[in-house]
Image (cartoon, rainbow over all chains, first blue to last red; front, side, top):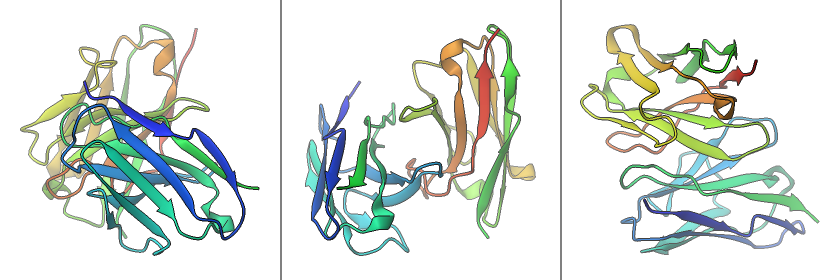
Length: 107
Length: 119
């Protein structure tokens, strides 16, 4: 099975900072990668699919990039409402594995 | 409004069974694959199972294969997860989520139903 690894596992950044989260697959996944945001005590929310396509309603400060085995979620200017855990997931083939997540908070 | 609502969670002893349900509304249920995703207390998300729109394709994680069975009733806009031979490590909040058209990432999530396996 393809393994999914996210880094860092947690980060603290200042308001307005550019934040980057990395997701790595142990093999190529044909850009079938999604990103989710889960705020504390809340339901996960789809942010990005197909590596870089923003889900409707998601603020444009979020962006996704990458190809092959290395992918990135970027928050261009960190806002208070972005405090959350972020997860990437592969969906090219089973198992549709989630990575371990990245917890983002404000410094 | 597009939504999915889970039910059926509860406390069950190790080795027991439970059946989760998920009722969908606000969209054409029969057009979309569906997913079950779980989250153990304080842990990350874990994909459990997916089923295609017409039940032709069914997938399970290795951790539940042979113990859990996913099914759907398109006439009732409902998704099910029959969980047998439950273990303590199955304790989690179980989310039902819609797939995308032709893909299995999760678009619309329910609030989840809590399953606790304990003696």
